Length: 243
Image 1 (cartoon, rainbow, N blue to C red):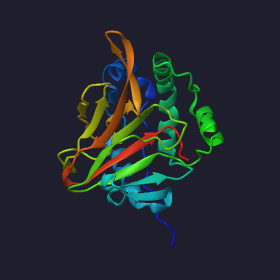
Image 2: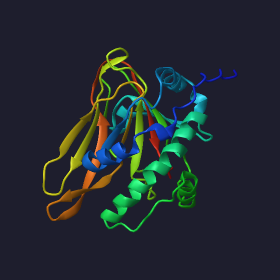
Image 3: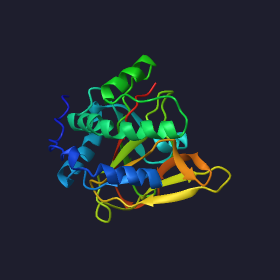
Image 4: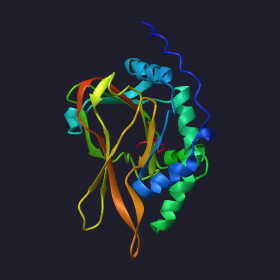
């Protein structure tokens, strides 16, 4: 059987319209930043519909089998759908300077190339050749445990998640959650309210925080609280590839 054609995806909004100064301030202050209405509702629905098109994906993971939570997700295979590839390559150059500044503050020598293609070459040279963008699907009672999307030694320290479903209409519950583990202190939680089409940019594994005696490093994890009703779809954009 020939697979049916994927839904038509609309053109993306112009990335330069994003208030990147506000994104930088929020990332520095909280370890996350919301980009309002990155995708329109029509494109969100088309993107979510790709979940049933198994020919787009290299793997499917049922979270409960691995202790990751409940729900499932699928990693796209190369070549990525055009809009996902455009988001990945279009967002990266704006995030690389933030990542490099964080590395310098934390005393980490590694720096990231200004263009995504050059960074991917480094990933592939290290044996990380499998694409990491993914779609996640949750139903009633599903959730995602707190975790970090590392996938190998080459790690870009920021990633993006886009909510494709409409809260209150498609699902209830299912809030995006971050925790920040501070040295010798209890973890700080952050619940990030998202509307359909909103994107959240967040720290993958650690970030610098300014303390009274100078900057220090905190560990970050993210997850999704329990979906109480309906179905929730999310697109995840991870900038490093997997081993």
